[in-house]
Image (tube, rainbow over all chains, first blue to last red):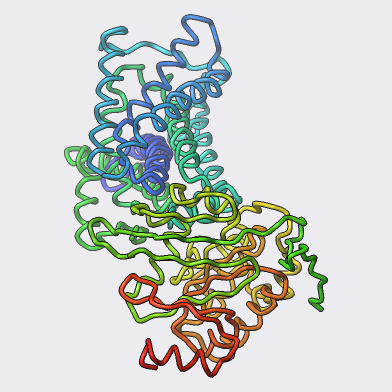
Length: 295
Length: 253
């Protein structure tokens, strides 16, 4: 069978693979967004820009100091995450009491970051080559699977699983879950919810930056690479349910695949299919597919 | 099984297990507001170390508000709250908890996203002298059977016991309990009574809010009656009959 509903298997497999890669990015970014919204009550509009900064730092590390991709996977999240810590402590914490201020402030931060990057590096993309060890791919017959893309999916999903385990299975995660559910009472036990919020924001930013480094060799490093992505990621978080971490990951992957399938069978709808799904889900289940009441 | 020799200071005050002088609470002329609503008026109240004091009063009298003021959840205040030698009126809940005051709220506050063991271990150990998990499970054996259940899968009585158990680990010796027997079956109420009596024998200081006057009468040293945010009387429980008559006067019991 070399065709499915009039579409060649190679095309379907290719789009599915692309869909899974996109889905992996949606998953890792929506996880960070969901965790931040849950604990800090902030809709982090800067998340896409933080993803872009991760890619940019990787590019800068390579071009200015010859630091390899593999080191960048560690250093870029640390650098951008550190900026996130500072931002949270001195800026975001002050406006977190109102959703609208949180959105406005983080949106402003995104615009600043994107503007500065565009002014300094230009609007055209900066190239970043695939690391030596991951060049080439394997021919599976019906599709060619580049090693790098397999690596991206594996790394993203591993990180999602690790984050999920950290939150759901460790004592630190218990503190995070408790502070998210009822932070005022957690303070009455002596837990430093403010510090926890700062660290959580920094961690989510680092996660976004890590995704940025993964993205650098696949897409060119440009100032708005996160801006288009973040809109879709918001839709993913809404569909998955704002309070649910597993929902964010499952929805991210599922929607990436849905997008890929739509591109295969009905390309005109591929840009908007996720938003159509979002509208349907919100009508039938306003809290999202896996959502729980944030109270 | 729970026999313990209590060290006492020269004045007869039970010292805590670190040998330190436990702290008492002294509230003087406390006014409190929820936004613009003036809810506490010149409240004065003392709790001596090792005492059990119960706040009584009708609904809306300000009992829960007083506890929230002590633990730092009521921020808009005027007047003095001292715990030991520390002025805690301007402190937030985290600092107050670290000074040794524990809080068991009316809604119990058991976390749905944590299992029983995680709920138990959530409050950090703040000082020496707290109970070990073994001691806590000896006090509450039924909790040990439900460790992997999620917090809100427990019955009301089990949640209340968990809410008490988790603060016993912290080492805090001054416990605020808001209606610990509310909505619970008599068997559980008895269990809680026994637990609080045991804590009292260990030298803990307890400040309770209670609507169940029969329960309060069985454990309290003193009553403090609140009415519309004011303290209208305090009296001891040495003569239960006399105390009951007093309570009936204020609360039409």
